[in-house]
Image (cartoon, rainbow, N blue to C red):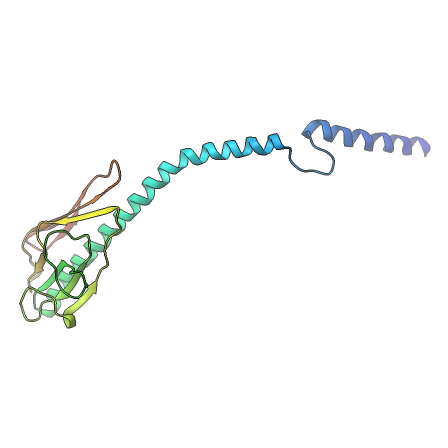
Length: 185
């Protein structure tokens, strides 16, 4: 029995010393300063590699979201024109967001409305959708300030170009064909 106790005592001392040598720590745990610095250096390198890819991803997501929203609104205007048997408009928003604006810069947002009185403008009661300004990193320029859909769903052919202000941004073109079909490239 005394031999077993001596072996057990020797084994526990050996086990503590082996853990200290193997992991470079004391038996009560923790990390050394060198280990923490190495982990922080590896994390900084990984972050530096991942940041540009993440930035590209967020910019691409913003652009895709804006395209989806605009194409959806153009299709909604076409459907409203057919449904109401009246002309529908998608137009540049004025500064107050209450009526159609002027110019071909769609950066400040747009309106979707039914043109009940055929005056090529959106009356407050005719507005179906009011879209806010785009993110400052996006640019949207059209060939006209107003895109009109007739009661048959046809339209005057127009195009809008959505771009970005970041390096390497490729412009995307949203086209409204004379048939009223909306597509993006």
